[in-house]
Image (cartoon, rainbow, N blue to C red; front, side):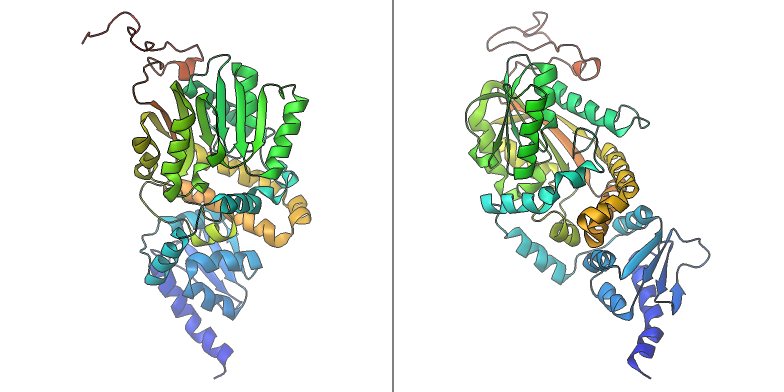
Length: 419
C-alpha cells in the first residue's frame, strides 16, 4: 500500500476523532474527493473541504492554528455557514495542551514597549485606508457600534456609539479631552463638533494620524482637535476627561499599571474617564492564529485584570457596561460589507490577505456570539470626585446631566446626610 492509499484509509477515522474532540458538531468534512465524514442523521451546518492529504495532517496536529493557515492558503475551504461552524468550534469545551501553554507563556514574555506598539499598529492598521474604507462605515469607526435597536444600520449605530461615549464622559463645553489610540479620528472630531470641547489625541499609526489630520482640516476643526503621532506613555499635560476606545487590547496586561499611572498623572481632580475594550469573561489567551496573523501581541483582559489600571492609581470605577451583543452585530455588518466588496479587496490586497481578513471577521462574529469574548465600557473618575452625574438618565435623554457637588458642597436638593 502506498502512502496516499494509507492516508486515504486512516483519514476518515482521524477526522471522526477530531469531531468528537469538538463535541460532535453538525459539520461535514470532505477529504480531497476521497471521502465525506460527518454526524449521522443531522444536516451539516457547513462542509469543510480539505484539498490535499498534507492539510489533514497539519489540521490534526494543531487545529487551532492550522485551520486559519490552511484556509488562507486555499488548502481548506468552507462551504456553508462559516460563522456558524466557527461558533460551534469556539463553544466546544477544550483544555490547552502543554505545547499551547508553553506558547502562551512565551507570548506573555513579549515586551509591549514603544517599538512593539508601533510595529503592531503598522501590521494591523496600516494595511491602507482604502482597504478599511471598503467595509467600515463612512466615519471609519473600527470599534464596536451601539445599536439602540437591532434593526439600526451601521452608520446610525456608530454615530450612536460616539454619542454614547460622550454622554458617559459627561462632557462640558470648553473642556480639554485627551484620547489614547484615536483611530481615524471619528470620536475626537465628534466630541469637538457636538460637545464643544478641545481634544488632543495620541496614536502610533502614521496612516491613521495623517487621515485624521486631513479630515480635521476639511471639517474646520483643526484649531480644536490635535492629532499627535506618539505612544500613550508620552501623554502629558492636564485634561478634564480621558478616553480610550479600542486601544487597551494592545497595551499588554503587564503595562496596565503604567497606563493607569499616565491617566492619574494627567487627569484633573474633577476629571472623568472611559476605557472601551474587547475583554474576556474569564482569563484566556487569544486564539494563536489571530494573535500571529492579525493582532500581534493582543490580549483581551478580564474585568479583574482591568482593575490593575484603576486600583493602584487612585481611580474609582463608576459604571461598567458589557456591549457583547452589540459587537457581534457590528462584526456581522463588517463581514457583510467585506464580502460584498470582495472582488475589489482581492484586487487591492491579494487573495490570501483577503481570506485572512474574511476569516478574522467571521471569527469575530462567532466569538462574540459564542460568548467567549466581551466588550467592556468602564467609566471612572478620581477617588473623591463627586462632581459627577447624579443618575444615568442623561445617557438616554441627551439632556445635560445633573451633577453632584463641587468639593465640599451639598448634593443636588441639599440632601447631604439624608438617608
